[in-house]
Amino acid sequence: MKSFFGLVFIIIAVFLVNKYVLSSKAYDGVTKVTDIISSYPINVYDFKKTMADYAYHLCYKNEGVLSNHNISISECVDNHDERKQDCDKKVFRLAPLNLETKEDALDYSRQYTQCTLPYKYILG
Image (tube, rainbow, N blue to C red; front, side, top):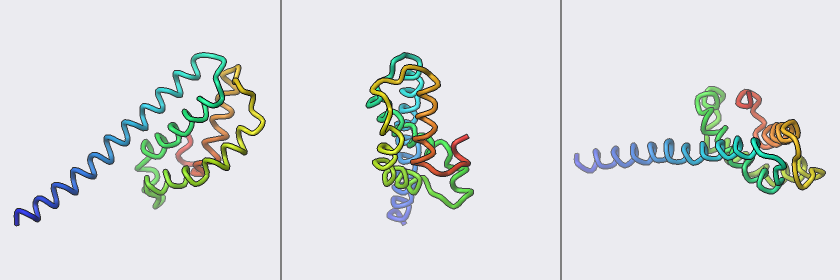
């Protein structure tokens, strides 16, 4: 009986660590997006790293929406990881080394997010 409760406790602990620790790491990425966008010019290499963090944040932030469409957070993250390299090439292929305006940054951000996370219901 003690082992049953121990097992239940471990499962709950793993779930909570996954949900709150990983979710908070993804949230830190969003803070970086807003920090980078507030100062110009933006180095495109730093911007790409920040956009990858932001994509993870979108997966964690929209857990309820994803589950309504039978997509788990891990599937969302895996989809991003699979598409990241191709989308980096596609979206940032002709990008300048520095993004000079907020409009450029937001445009590249939108293109990257739509490419790596093609779930239109979490992009809004």
